[in-house]
Length: 352
Image: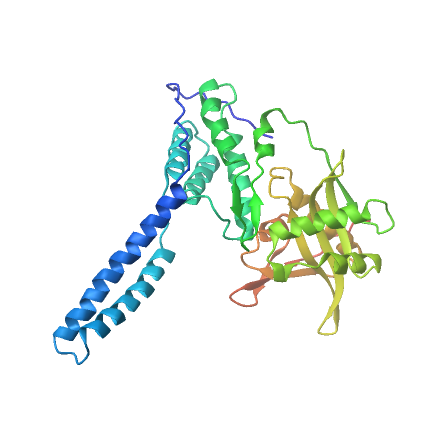
């Protein structure tokens, strides 16, 4: 964990009072109904006016037709709107307070992204990566809030506490509760001491590991991208799929995992990294890099020393930067969505 002490001149910050969100959703509903009603009124009036202008239909039909068009237009308009709230305003203003005390460009960019995120009421995570993004940006800002400035701590900690345990829905509309306990404990948290191991179906904690992997899948991937727990368990037991896990040394809590298997594509045997995920709050522990390094070591050991290693993945896949750190370079753009990366073997590979 990195912390930063600022030497910039400052005036003590005063915490902004946290508004209660009681009635915010009702206010948004009333605003939505009022907007649709206004649109319907004008379109119904316009339809009635057209009938009186000799368009060949009665005023009643014109009004009804206009009203139906107004309802459709109103609903489409609502889908494109984000209603602000006193709580959203509080979060944005607090981020602006913190922004004025920070000089690090990465932390400032994190604040910009968080402000965009909090412009609407925090009710739903739109994509799987949104959960990870939220933890990443909050942690980055936390690490640059000067721990020696009591006024900053009195502004930032209540901000995190206000988001902690917020009940929202995920990208598939399932109810979840945001857990920011790691961010709250970051200033005095002991080292997590992550430990990597290949999952063995004969070990006592195998069932527990499968349950934790299944839970992590649900916050990391869409339902069609997940492997059912029983299917995954069977494939690991039969040796058709291998699973690397990274856990806390004490307690065995899962921090991340990777899945690989040997498949045949166009008569060639290919190792497929079928999943790589880390716990959203496990930020700054290099879980992704550690998983990828261990997986690549295992896969590359099985290739002839002179054979190049190739990987195909989506252009938007954040693992692209991880592969670059391990010597993979762009070889070809396979489509608008996917790229082929290649790592040329230049020296004998270690058997470690």
